[in-house]
Amino acid sequence: SQQGEEDPQALSIQEGENATMNCSYKTSINNLQWYRQNSGRGLVHLILIRSNEREKHSGRLRVTLDTSKKSSSLLITASRAADTASYFCATASNFGNEKLTFGTGTRLTIIP
Amino acid sequence: NAGVTQTPKFRVLKTGQSMTLLCAQDMNHEYMYWYRQDPGMGLRLIHYSVGEGTTAKGEVPDGYNVSRLKKQNFLLGLESAAPSQTSVYFCASSYTGRLDRYEQYFGPGTRLTVT
Image 1 (cartoon, each protein chain N blue to C red):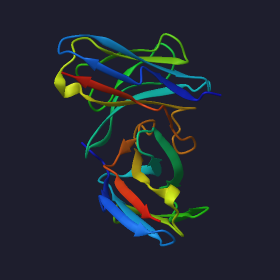
Image 2: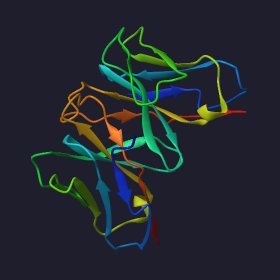
Image 3: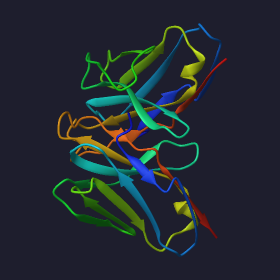
């Protein structure tokens, strides 16, 4: 069964705007990761946040984690056409954290 | 470095046929994974390996077998393909199983259609 559910399933915004997507999960985690997938390609790791962290930044990306609500959000600021892709959250549990469980993804479209 | 490569990129099989998907990585990673991706389902783990000569079942292992005879290669086999196995298959690798330190690296995928 899927651990993570992303919301929204699809998002379209104008270039330059900020994009926010959310991930909810069901069980306790060791860490949560976000990946990007361009159309027809493999996934690429973006950022990892550990269960004892609340916020993390990487360039134009900001990730938050609320373990009490079992949720995370990914914010992409000043979006660009090249950000058009699907974004997936993935969780590693506290037990056997060698495996990731992926969510269903958010399809982001940046309109030039 | 080529990273993670997958062979073939596309394949069409008839029901009941068999095939092997090959994944290779040149990063000296210990851990390797096979996923399938279906519309609206995200990625689901089929099998994985924590080192040469080892394999373990993931979330959806039925109908698939795997082998890790060499550290750099991870093979996924379908002995008798079924239409339900139509999917895009991704291979991934990571340096260790400590995924709080090391991310997974993905191959480009194999699109398989079973008719």
